Image 1 (tube, rainbow, N blue to C red):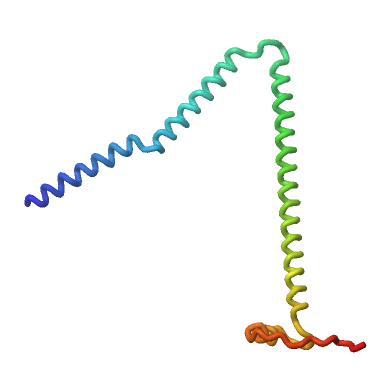
Image 2 (image 1 turned 45 degrees about the vertical axis):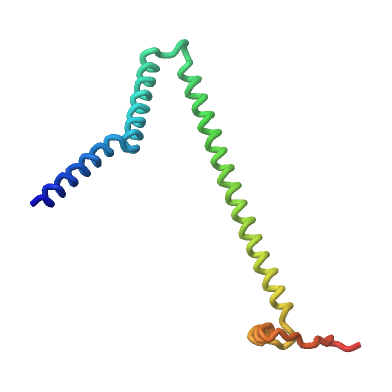
Length: 137
């Protein structure tokens, strides 16, 4: 019975620790920050609505400015996308050229009438047959 009582005390203490940690968890702080930013945004928008424009046509100017900024952002996004596509194409071309270069080197390593399997066995043996020119002059 004593062990069960002690176990219960330890479990209760652990649960109290977990409850305390929940109150101080970082996600709670992030949630409070999000709530504060939402409140600040609503306050600022309410102030802007209540104060109104300083002069006639200011709202139109703001809309024009926003439209221009949106267009600039779209252009920047399109340019970034194009640059990324070009970079990917260049990477593909470089990879293809490196593959082609590697294949050319491997083919040049083969002796006349030699299969790749024969070349591998030749490399394993470490022997290089004497190469004679194909055409004698």
